[in-house]
Length: 198
Image 1 (cartoon, rainbow, N blue to C red):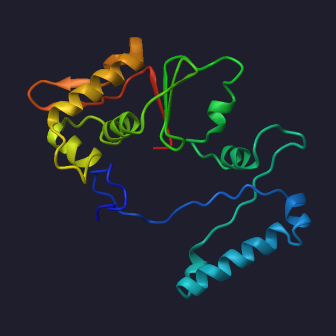
Image 2 (image 1 turned 180 degrees about the vertical axis):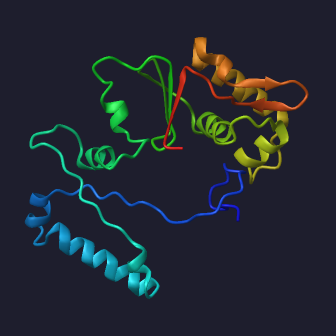
C-alpha cells in the first residue's frame, strides 16, 4: 500500500498504527475538571465508536519528569517516551547552536549552524521532496509535477533556478543538494545533516 496523502513520499509502506502524544499535566487536567485517566478512557471510548474493539489495540503510557523540568509538556512527553525524533533534541542544543544543517520537516525550517535559513515555500518543498526520497535521483519533470501541480506553464528550467537559489542560501553546505548528471537532483545521507520529523 502506498501512503497517498503525502505527495512527497514514493516509498511503498503499510501503516500499522500511530502514536499520539498529548502534552497535558495533572494540574492542567484538574483545572479543566478531569484527570489523565479520564482523558485516556474518553479517547478509548472514541476509538470504540470509530471501530468496535479498536480500544483493545491501544496502549497508554504516562510520561514522568522531575518537578520544575523546563520545556513544553509535549516535548517532555516525547523525550520521556523515547521518541527518537523529539524536538527536545533541538531544545537541548540551544545553549550551543548545532553545527551543520538541521532540516525540521515538521516546522518547515532549515537551520545552518543554529541559524534559521529564510527559505521560500517552494524552496523548502524542494528540500523536503529530495530528503523524503533520499538516495533517489529525481528528474526535473517530476519536481515540476510535484511543486507546481496546477501550473502547466512551468518549465524544467524553473527547477534549476530554484536549486541555484537554494544552494546559495545553504552556503558551505550547498553540496547536500546534488546534481545527478543527465537525470536531475538528489539528496544523499550526509554527516553534517540532521533530519527532524521524517
